[in-house]
Figure (cartoon, rainbow, N blue to C red):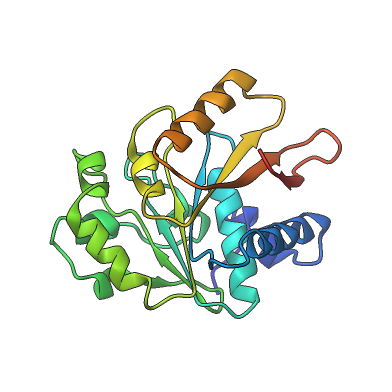
Length: 225
């Protein structure tokens, strides 16, 4: 097991599974599962307008709740510009998604087990000079086709929607998108703009997650946007 550090301390669903915050993430998982009766939500992306809104923390804890339910989960760091999943789970990042997309390594060589049962990681790898081109490549699409047959749930961490096009490209590969908003910090106009960008590429927005509500520091709230 990885030691508890200031980085992976954000995995409250693992290190403090009985907390009210952990219960919030489990409710989020349930809401997602019930959001589509006819179509299974298999690939989920987390999105935000700006950086620092809690995307990585949210998607990491949500992935843990799916794994705790017995689902085989893959968590992918598709932020090839400012990756952070490797720090949350305390794993190396010298090889990863960019290494596979650039034909330097095979997929099987870079997938990593986490210290959490049923949860595997696909870290970003070295930061490439052309992240958008890599994410939008046919090789990326082929890779996802291979992976979706091996996991019950695949989740993506991505850069902010308003900063670069990467997240919009990833959204086209997913069954649904969760929009994270740092409550009281991000302007409403930016959230609306982010939603419009996602809808423009026909992304299916499952709902919005409000982080850091004043009612309870660090709390998580979910609802339709």
